[in-house]
Image 1 (cartoon, rainbow, N blue to C red):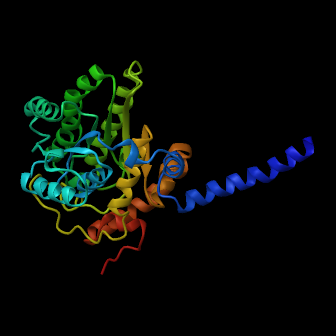
Image 2: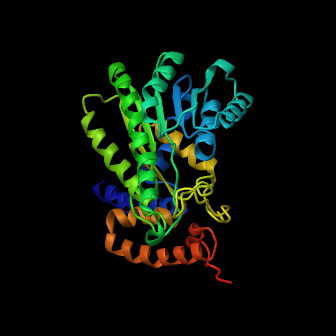
Length: 336
């Protein structure tokens, strides 16, 4: 009998490791999130009827979040600066779901105007009576070399990505602690875990968010039903590159480059909703080789530095050649 058990274990363990290896090679998220997507709660069941406030909802990941949340039956508060774009997103949400007009509230918001955040939060709570989920998605990226970048750009990135997000969170959090339940989900980035060239200020702002929310989570141990979750996507097809800061505050990016090689926004958002539905505290969402970077930085930083330096050089070459910087991880940069 004992021999049979030992033999079974010797067969099961290699199979178990082989399955995990396949998941890693072909997967596009960390193991916890991938298993939740297969065996965990469905967003359609867990998020139905919840009130979800999405910042940065006028395009990209924020727009897709609104779209998929509407399909899940969530009631929505959509915020960004451009009210006309928010209304467009609202119409799309109503067209693709069973939601009624009163189930989607457009609430224009500028993360830089922190004095307005208290009033905006009160308006959001007053409309639906409560907020179940806050998704901090608003922010801007960066494409510029440090030696050429104005300090004003760094200040703007921290004001918007970090302090703007912290400000909204601090307004919503007391409401959730009073109710004893809620979720605050913040979209960070792969560069919130490991820096990347051309994004020194952006990476700094995302590192700051990681530190803030990791610390906040430990302060809320008396509120086990409040989820503090950070999402770390790799490159995703969105408008974030088009709107990126450059070396000067008001200088637009010359060319965003082709984005087709990046993860589809719909897949990234689906995994995010799976993570929220299953209470995952940190989500790594990326195709290879970015997923490898996550694990390398976590477990083998010396090897990670070697790979980062090698690919970082290609990233800068692509940028100087007028190509999308992230394509360095997929194709050889063209210099002609």
